[in-house]
Length: 295
Image (cartoon, rainbow, N blue to C red; front, side, top):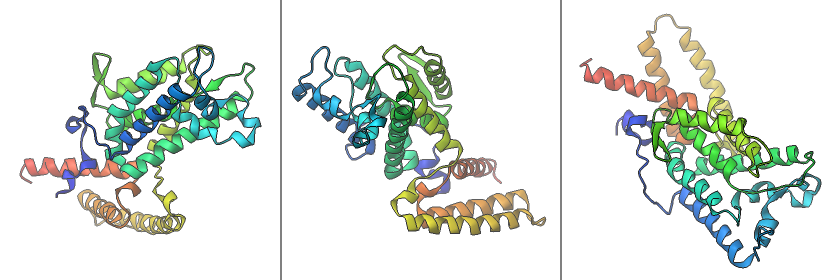
């Protein structure tokens, strides 16, 4: 398999977001879990017009959660609950996760995708606890919107030129990303929609992508220490190579590509930063172009 034949080096034009279902994927399992919680709450939660259901009440965040440490688990469980009075809440969240999440999962791998999703939900939950603790009006916060918007924005950042549809209107993904940001930033509070949670999800995706985060080190702390040591050694080597006046730009690019491929071989593709992935995409495209031109 050639360098540019690998799945995570697809360009936007090669992206396939047509409907398909793989029950082993993280996206499918997250959707199933959210639907199960929703259905259980409807069937056994004694839902009424004024009561969201006992399951939602037990799992959802509230304005006073910060002051009740024994309920801090809700900083993550809220993301698996949805409004029992509005089915569109879970429908559109799961629809977005289904169509955009699959490509993001392919890009980062199943385990890293799960870490991103769950940590984004936790980040949104903790930030919401801190912010809403000082709001005058009590409120319940529930739904996967923060984590789903994080995944949707990672789709936008990774595949900015992919064609997506807003209802029936086709547009590049980067335009949809702008719509996500503007509609949540300028929407009025007090409408019953947690726009602040949405913005926290967008913020988490932005930090993850542009700061080159990778959560693969969380699986084993010692692996994290080892990877940092290896990164520091490679960094010093890389700086030394760049200072070598005898190397051409093509040779420097080839050395950098070799370094990244060795990193994949040693630590897996989940260990790559976004900058390294972008470099390999660009490098593989240059290699293809040179082959087409006969160089």
